[in-house]
Image (cartoon, rainbow, N blue to C red; front, side, top):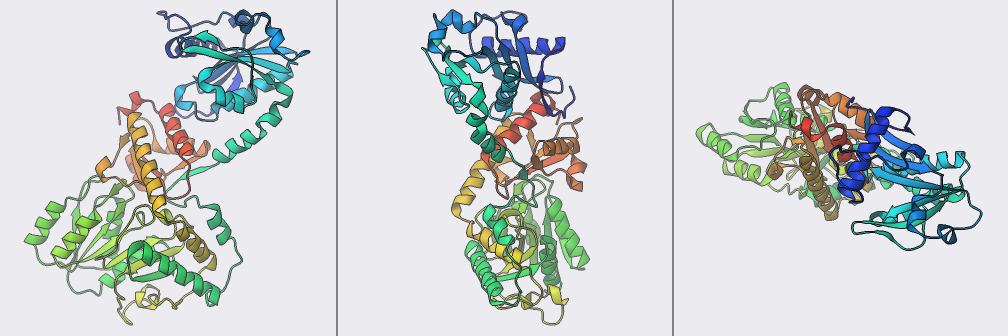
Length: 536
């Protein structure tokens, strides 16, 4: 089969489709639900096969789910319930629904509902107005949510127990309208990108407010509230906010390091550490480089030995959460290292602020941005410090942090829309958010590992909000990313460094649901089976 195939619903007509039906029938009603005896062929042909109309869900040439419809009496329930008609409303045109099965990995997705919706379309087109089903007792709540009404006693025995149920087809659309709307809400575009991120509806409303002057009192009030919240979140005493990106924030740091006496050290164990090196080179800083393999944690013992044996350094510049690999570098270890050697610690916290608890005590300069972990719109550069660092008159005006430190300072044009949105997003930064991200990240990594996926960062050094996956040879990351996007699941794949390494990346920076995460893992596992993962 092709690896990247959309889900197709249809009536089975081809011999190969019927062969897949018999095999799914066997896996479900012999191996999973012990209703029939094992046989060496691994297939189970239903006794009513010739009378069945099968509605199926395919991905390429793989069968994802099926359900059968038939209208000839006696029904299977006739054999289980004497005088079946006595349990049913009179005057109905009946059909029987049988063999409803969905592959286990996709049972909590919309495939089940999709099969039922198409089943009802076929049944109504053929003139039936009521459908009967033997619903497995394992899924009674699900059937009832779809409008199925239980009747009569439970039939079957052991692990193969069923509740007779009926569904009034003429009222089905009304019965499931609310459910369909809920499913559509839950299965809307799910964004797992490093940016832009999915924002809370309150943040979106704040952003959509009428723009106000950055010289007005309302803007200054919002600016003060944002700075106060950032101080409370990080322990930093000084906050500078500029209109720009995280790259601008790091350029501000580089500009100030250029006027700090002495040499420095830049640490890199991923793409964004390499970008700090580039910042340092462009500012003509005097510095050394310590590189670690991508995906590895920084080796603080090696760093300590290097600092002991070399000349004294004025500063160390590192990435806290290395977004490219999902490694979360140890801030306490970096802080202790800088303190022990009398160096100023500068930190790129662009992907960690808002996803993990951060104490900026002992950090000389740190950078972040309004998007990513703070879950607002991109566009506000953030620089944090303990003391009001200044290099008067020696820097380009826009990069001079001394112009931003004061809470009343708005030296250049700002967007009130971005500031109000960031203020609203910061109000949602609570310890419960960190707990939720940590829990979801752990579940995500565990589920991916269980499916055989190769995760770049080791569990003990991983960021809860970033999971980077190496795909197997022969499975292109661009193709996977584009296919997931067609399914409404947006992951990072298009950056040059990801494409070069055949990686994809899942980020929990913005709004997300655990159901969407489950759908994402299920979709990946379905399209890239474990046997292919072993080639990663």
